[in-house]
Image 1 (cartoon, rainbow, N blue to C red):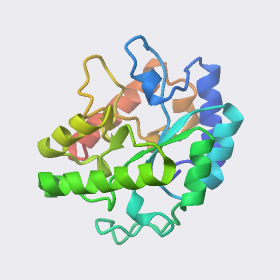
Image 2 (image 1 turned 135 degrees about the horizontal axis):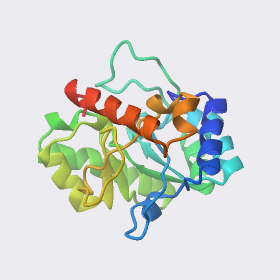
Image 3 (image 1 turned 45 degrees about the vertical axis):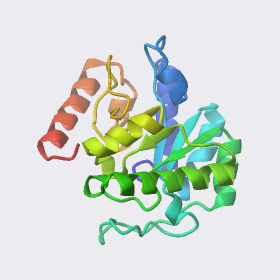
Image 4 (image 1 turned 90 degrees about the vertical axis):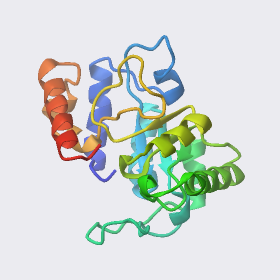
Length: 225
């Protein structure tokens, strides 16, 4: 919810409904027979997923996935790699996370301390991901099935680990999913670029899709993906 006020998020879900774009969980979205739809994802575990996003998800009966950084649960978003100029947010506590899961939000892995995985060797990657998975399973009774790379940053080592431990893993590459994707490096549409009503009210139209393709190309030129 860094990018969306609650009202705008509700408008996005209404627009998806009105344009006939179904909202799926990731199992369904990635199933071989699915040709059209979206999945909703949240990263990190800011508390406003519970206070602001959950009421909207409930109103629309929409599933979602939360990629949780387990080391900051009940704290603030001050992980070691955080930019010192980044705004401070309160993070979810385990009671709120449990209620999110009960409401249909699937809790997935986003590492334990939110590192840049490109800087880590195989053992450290396994420790970061394994600790997060262990804590989530211990607390919630379900091991994560999906993974999001912190900042979208990944290496061959990180992809190899993810490929062997999760059904799929997501990056920050700004584009739609195509056929024959690497399950360890799926793209996502960043909600930051979906805030304008002219974009999200016609996501299936040529102009919004061209706009998103252009933003994605600019991100790649800046080395963001």
